[in-house]
Structures are given as structure tokens and as C-alpha cells.
Image (cartoon, rainbow, N blue to C red; front, side, top):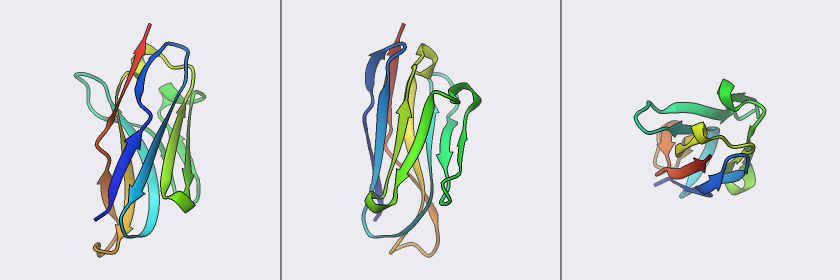
Length: 121
């Protein structure tokens, strides 16, 4: 079974940086796309950043120029470098992967457990 494990969240002051990591474990055939979603208290989950198999990226407007998503195919991992953090970036960040494992018949959605990011003003 494929599992996604995130790390790197925490509490930092506004203007600082954090780097989130997410690694996929298990018997994996292929990873098509990765994404980071976030959910602020009382709000719906939203897409913060995504990266395709061709390394095309897409960002939420409010994080453009501050966040960078990248992937390491050799490590089955994805990262989110977050700079110039703002209090409104606070929330739980979830790693998402479109992955085909050996027990899957096709690509399917996988989610991490979430990591808390808190930005103080």
C-alpha cells in the first residue's frame, strides 16, 4: 500500500520561511503529479501548488512568487519551499499524489495526513 508522509511544518514568524517535504513509500509503479493543498480554520481546502509529470507548475494566486513546488523522482518525493510567509498562510498543509502502486489497476489519489503550519504576526 502506498503511503504519503509529510514533514516540515511548524510555527514561524511572518516573513520567515518553511520547507515542507512529502515522501511516498510502498511499492510504486509511477507518480504522475504532485500537489500541496491547504486548509485554514473554518475554510475549505484549496490547492496551493501543483507539479505535473512534465514539471509544469501551477500556483494559487496568493502564493505566487513566494512558494515553489519541486519534485525528486528518484526519492518519490515532493517539496514546498515557502518564503515570505504571512499569517494568512496558516493552516494544515496536505500532500497529494496521483500515483499508481502495484496493488492499483490505474493511477489513483493518495493523501498525506497533513502538517500544521502556523505563521505568527
